[in-house]
Length: 153
Image 1 (tube, rainbow, N blue to C red):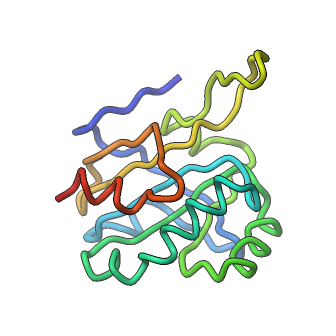
Image 2: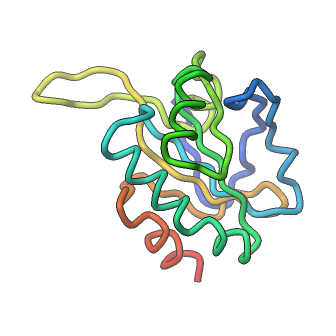
């Protein structure tokens, strides 16, 4: 499994968003990027995290950041999720888990004593020139914006 560290070059990616548009890391060159990985659309923690980023989206833009979410959900699920919560940012559908694995966001999890492989909720703050500036692996879904701000300020 890939393990990224602060200071590493962010892995290049190319994925499709909720509308089938191609999105790649190079699209964000010159902008800072909050790239967040989440397990599933329309689940309590994922809803809280997405809405927290949505509610602070204008502030992120003002600070020069763009926001992009990635999950293994299909495009249709992303469309419903975006519509339901009025999300202003794109979500990549990574059903093959290529981007997820490239960022080390896939691995062993435990639930009720059972071990399985799954998406590890995580966020990467990437600089204008594609360098990983911050990594969050213990995401506070309801207060993720403040969690990020505390580290980048």
